[in-house]
Amino acid sequence: DEENPLGIISVLRVLRVARVVKLARVVRLMSFFRELRLMVYSILGCMKSLLWATLILGVTFYVFGITFVSGVVINLDTLAQWNSSDTTGLRENFGSLGKCALTLYMAIAGGRSWGEYYSFLTPIPWQYRFLFLAFLMFTIFAVLNIVTGVFVDSAMQANHECRQVIIAEELDAKKEFLKDLRDLFHEMDQNGDGTLTASEFNARLGDESVIAYFKALKLDITDTMTLFQLLDTDEDKEVNIQEFLEGCYSLQGEARSIDTKIMRLQ
Image (cartoon, rainbow, N blue to C red; front, side, top):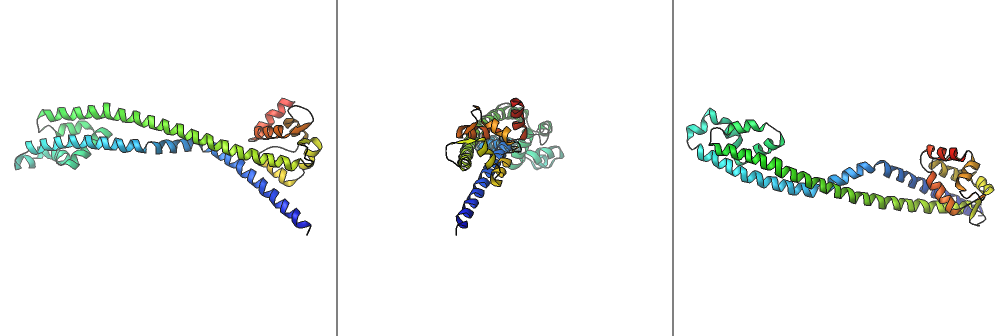
């Protein structure tokens, strides 16, 4: 009966350490995937702008397409002209509204050289070739540049919002991390005086659960006295909870972080 409470305490201790280890990994993963998250948020933030850009280009293709199709139908008013080999390219690319819209899209998107489409308009009056050049100038130098600017602005706004989300998440993760550090400190502080002496520190570092926690932080605890000195910033031979929290949080990460601080001590 007396062993059951001890077993429960041991299980709770292991669960607490496991939770701290998980939080430490989450913080590192959040930093690792930060750029990917910014890209995804920026792309998603541009979806609304993409919808409006598609609508504007669709209306533009429709207006110019109606004009070109009307010109083809009006000028190829005989069966001989319509079936002539000289008008094959004109019929295949400007003979219907659907074909004409696809032609205009390919002309500005680089699917095919706009010079070829320009030559296909030769059988009809020169005004339509001039209108085709006006279409290219309007869409490439006006519409597409404005759309690009809107996309960039939307991406920057989404990027800013994503950064705020990431900052909030990291602050929450840090808060949880420090909370579990505080619980660990109280567990190590056996006499409850709010400080850890060198003897208490050495004794608690013999606990496997505490060792597992420090290893999760990538802290080398083979030299306990050196680690104690790093945490004891005011050099009063005792580590209070503030020193413990700030020291463990600043020392977490790669081994080179603690190595640098050890070199400063030496």
